[in-house]
Image 1: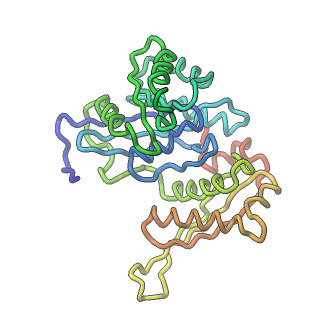
Image 2 (image 1 turned 30 degrees about the horizontal axis):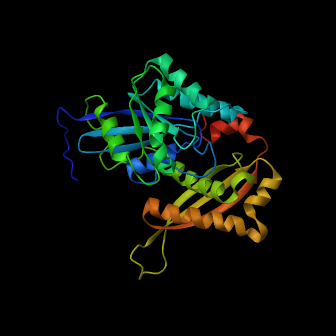
Image 3 (image 1 turned 180 degrees about the vertical axis):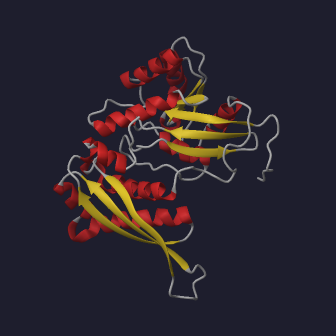
Length: 314
């Protein structure tokens, strides 16, 4: 698809906040809608920590999708900042995309979010995600359950599946139709406005979450220390530049450091291999990745460290 430099008078553009409880599939849906991996995913709840902006451009509209941290009861300063980040996003956008896990009954966390949105009288579209996990003869019942749960609001409901893609085209059309008229906000080729270092750090953190699972829940952060391009020695290789990345994985306890490193460094090697493969897709080139692990006790409760890692106060 080609785009002209100027948009027509009927073109639409705006911001969409993706809101929902942890682990309802927000980041997976972002990647599905945009068509590229811009948000990390894992089986662990509360994967998203930053308000990641993904950019979806079609011939009719450009939608800036803000993937927010899952709204949950915080247990430390980092958790408080994540919830504040998600809640503050709601008042800054043109539309809220409220995501439910349709494979489960709505719960108290969902009720809290719905009541919060009702008080602010916002434009809302509801996506019933994980629709592929709902048994066929129960789909009508699940749809009606969520419609009744929402009560006296006129928010449209769209069954969808971020994993297999069902309903996502209809969801995109519905979102674009609710965007205000306006020009491109970003160049059409952009899929995210996040700096490269942020995306590289997130790819490493994703691999830690995937491979350590519950052993290292959310007490891990990643700092990119240095990124530089170095020439390849083999002149026969087409691409003569390799990107070298030096990063530090932060944990809160010595025992967690041992888990991340693994016996004989096996776990760290696995994490590095997975992250390097994803990085090479991101930058479309060869990557040399060097990882270190550092213990920083209670970093999630230290304002200075949170600021250093990019988790600013809201």
